[in-house]
Length: 67
Image (cartoon, rainbow, N blue to C red; front, side):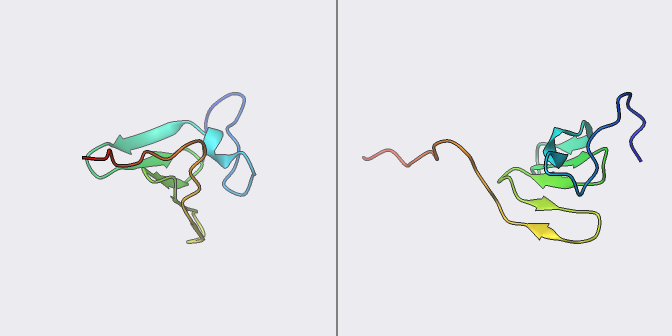
């Protein structure tokens, strides 16, 4: 599927999120990577074989400001 040189990581690779974005929709919050992975804005993923990867945020999570 990937035509890049060097090729992007495949969907089964641990570094699959490093693949280049083929299509992005910021309104709905997803990106289709060139390896067939759909990455969602909450960091969840849907792999080409329909495997669901739960959101896995890294770093701090924004907290609501106290009023």
